[in-house]
Image: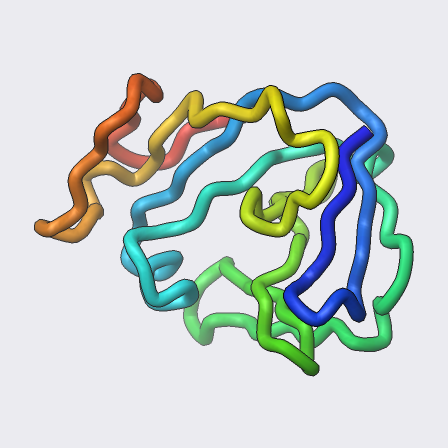
Length: 133
């Protein structure tokens, strides 16, 4: 089991399946949302993800003109898990507090969109655009 929470601990969740692969998105939208070179996420089935507390603290923003949204804690601003598609959730890897010892970056997506200063230094497989998880 994997557990995680936001920076202020108002929002918490658990993942009840085995996960090891981390996907790192380098697209310009994720860079702007995080203020860094992208975002590292786990992707899990909706049925394997459960909110433990704080859902009333979650705010969601949809990027106009795009099929993209982000969720965040309204108290501390931490990026939170959200809908990847109808069947799966994305979970920011930086929120993991327990059970993440086996996680590793397995895939870099939207590499063709990465910032010029972004240096990929691990062995994760590189994908020029989106990667179907």
